[in-house]
Length: 265
Ligand SMILES: NC(=O)c1ccc[n+]([C@@H]2O[C@H](COP(=O)([O-])OP(=O)(O)OC[C@H]3O[C@@H](n4cnc5c(N)ncnc54)[C@H](OP(=O)(O)O)[C@@H]3O)[C@@H](O)[C@H]2O)c1
Image 1 (cartoon, helix red, strand yellow):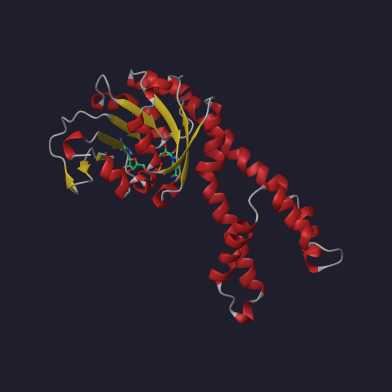
Image 2 (cartoon, helix red, strand yellow; image 1 turned 135 degrees about the vertical axis):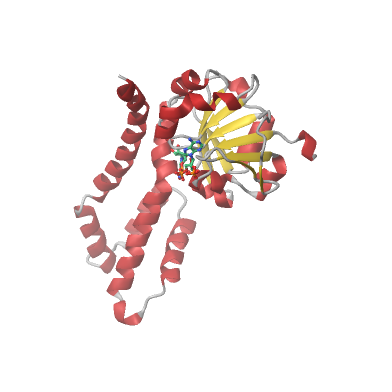
């Protein structure tokens, strides 16, 4: 694709998620401008400031925090042209709220995650009008990783909990295991790389919930060491803890949109 035919994209917000979406692949597909809280626009491909911002943008990615959008959303109308497609990555903010704020119906909601950094985001997409998703947009979103289409807007809230926040929950749980293992074997300086490798190995061996169940049973022989540990972990209601963790993130995603109505009331 030659530079002149590349679509132009504006990232409104250039924080943690936005930075993870930028890859060589994305920069080869599109010209990326970013806008920050000081109204500075940068051209990421050319690594320089854009002094006059009168660009037509084919796509605008909303990468600001939900409360920033709920308070200042309509100030971003000025970056939209008739054919600009808005792609919201924000948790919780409904399509109808974005429509009202930006005065456009050309909106797609997506839920990527920071794993896009390694082209491993499992990006969920929700759109009312399927015609908005063209081949060019699919290519752009595929630069983040894989794409999962959802039919109902509430599925984006579940994706926000499991795939948006999930990487942090998983990292936290893995790290607890790493720290506990090191504490247990303190005199012998257990190598944390080996423990993290253990997680990868278990997942490489087991590719479904059924296989994981069978795996646990196959190494939990009665009165053995695994049995002693598994019995304890089950007695501590770990299932409830994990379910509630995910539910709290989902519930929070559902609350966000109504916060604007409350603050305006
Ligand atoms: N982080 C994740 O893993 C993740 C995953 C899925 C979805 N999301 C969603 O992605 C969005 C961004 O999250 P984040 O973690 O990347 O947040 P973040 O790191 O706090 O980044 C927010 C960005 O918004 C910019 N900003 C603030 N006010 C602005 C304004 N008035 N105009 C233009 N830019 C403004 C900030 O600019 P300055 O740098 O100048 O302060 C900053 O670059 C959120 O809506 C979140 O729900 C995040």
